[in-house]
Amino acid sequence: MSTSLPAAAHARFPAMNSALSGSLTIAQADFMSRLALQLGLPAQNGDALIAPQLFTGPAGLACRVHLQEGDPPAVRPEALLPMSVQELAGAEVQRLLAVQSLVLGELGWFLSTSPEGLLQLTSLAWINDPIDAATALDLVNGVGMAIIHALMLDEPSLGQSQGLSN
Figure 1 (tube, rainbow, N blue to C red):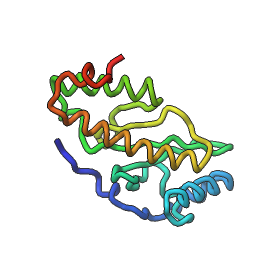
Figure 2: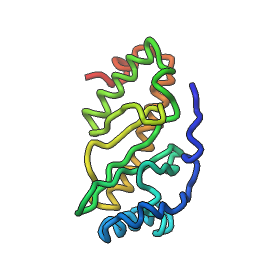
Figure 3: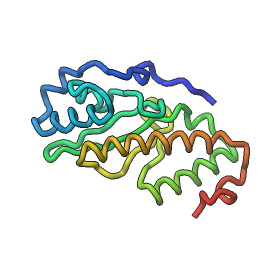
Figure 4: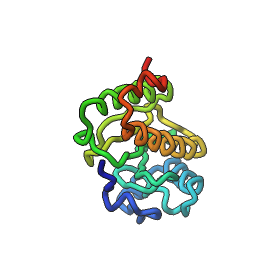
């Protein structure tokens, strides 16, 4: 399976998005600055975390956050997995559906296809606290890595043998 990511996904300290920073409310700019600090980035890089910009998450996955319009500020984190849906066939598709059922039902995350053509794991909830958003980004990286490993297994009975089916 492919492990290539868009070049922008490898930027740990993305450049400021000056066009976007002028359109943020004070509350949104503060929220994004606090989120950047929680992620170990300079506060001034907060707006560079906003989609469509990509940054590298704790487990090395390409991440971004969608900023909810208006106030109070909230974000919806997502991670891109380094594989495309076109790479999956046969038993892998069954595993994908079993994993999707698990992450949706148990965690409230949606596994879909990103605009870049990669598998993407997205929170269904808007998160309105920077600490919780940073925690969610950490979680999505861990879950994303587990999904990659589950989809790359040669075991066709993954859904039954490992409790991934409902």
